[in-house]
Length: 151
Ligand code: COA
Image (cartoon, rainbow, N blue to C red):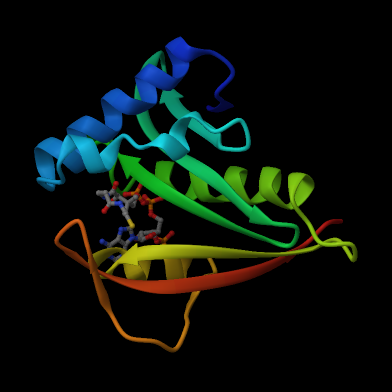
């Protein structure tokens, strides 16, 4: 089940997953991980769970009409490879195209992908954009995009 976060309690559950995955596992600093963008009214968080167990999270960061980012995509180790990440990406894209399309109903979603996760995002329909790899929080990243249209 993928829920759009509506309460602070749900947001704290997303943070708990991100602390486990990004801070404990990937050694990102907590200060970098939990940022001011999390609390912007325009940021949309998602919480994935099965049988009452929280398993994953992601967020949409609005940039401008027709363009947004999906980021902080994290699935707990125990649930990886079971489709939770794909469900999060599909639900986030579905909501994003409803909320921030351009005047023609089109949306570009940008991902700042950790290099190891590129095949995952490719399987969700994203493609690498030209441009150099870059370090963020000490981890190599590449930008990826996909285009969506409101039905
Ligand atoms: N390498 C290659 N393919 C991968 C992959 C990997 N590391 N991880 C997932 N995939 C593929 C799966 O095989 C599947 O493909 P298929 O449907 O053709 O079989 C598809 O991607 C969807 O997999 P899914 O089970 O939904 O992915 P997941 O729930 O394991 O989530 C991550 C993927 C990357 C979100 C998860 O591994 C994770 O949280 N990693 C740690 C945090 C992280 O690095 N986040 C990304 C930050 S940019």
